[in-house]
Image 1 (spheres, rainbow, N blue to C red):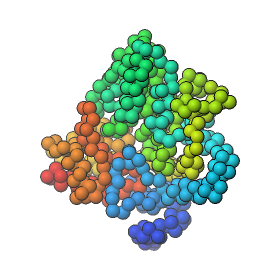
Image 2 (cartoon, rainbow, N blue to C red):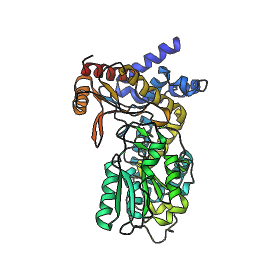
Image 3 (cartoon, helix red, strand yellow):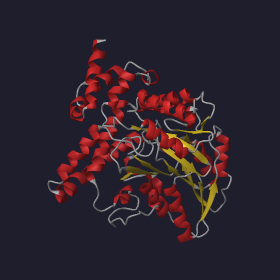
Image 4 (cartoon, one colour):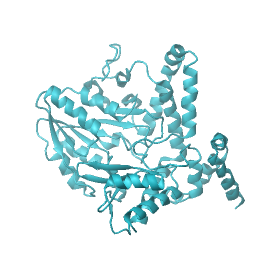
Length: 427
């Protein structure tokens, strides 16, 4: 009890921004991590003292409850500090520190990312976001007029727009899938992604997570079925890296892109491209690479000119923070938070959950609607009346409000969400 009182007293300091750095660098986090060694991820998921300590490492707003971490997540204070430290170093003598010092350290970062992704470092390119990563593939593959690409109407707009540009420029044929979600039917999903494949189909784009609802696709099964018919598989992993535990190569794709400023809590504007080693030579880089780079070298996708080295370097700190918490613990907590608010709203007669709760089909993100009320009205009232920031979704056949908590989200935050949903529903 004495330790608990001490923790709560120190937690009060969080309301003062000036006191935050001192608390973040105290021994509380290390002590909490050590204590966590004796708990399973599932038990620890409900340990509010532990997650309050993790929350203390963030500078998240005390007045706005941010439940749109699927868009972009805040970085913990230690990651912000790392970026500022490298920025200050670079600005002492930019052309020296950037090109002679910081540019040489990318290989260590590549190795850390590869270790987390479970792949060869020579399959990882570091860039700014999923869009940039996958645009290298979309615009870098050689397609001829009449070649087919299969994608869904529920895919992310940036990828759809890139493919439409190739359609206009090169005469490729886009073949559309319309998914009915939510679903737990793997056979249905595999069939939808493969039934339109012909001898002209060159690639199938598969979202690892449908960003609108949080639906997790059975990518491994889909990729295997697609490959059996011949085409390659490009995986949009914008919402998955650092969200739950998996190995990128085991997904079975040929190409994978992700953003690190979402669930990895890296600095805003950081991403990663993975290409299966034997496929690298097939893809032209989006930015012209030096002729000195071999066509099989993943580094050809990093020829961006002057780049933001401090952002890249701070990715390594985000990885350390992620590993400190523990990927399995993080995944269990995110599922616990999702289930917490959903279960407290399930008794509302007009409440509709647009996301499966089956473990293999969702994690932190869930989408809901209230029968008879527009999603935009729900999101607006949640913010104006309850300080809950989330996003309304109206896209193709998906209509609802997306809720995406993160590890710094408390049950108190979710209680405010639940209270707001009940009030809006008139219950």
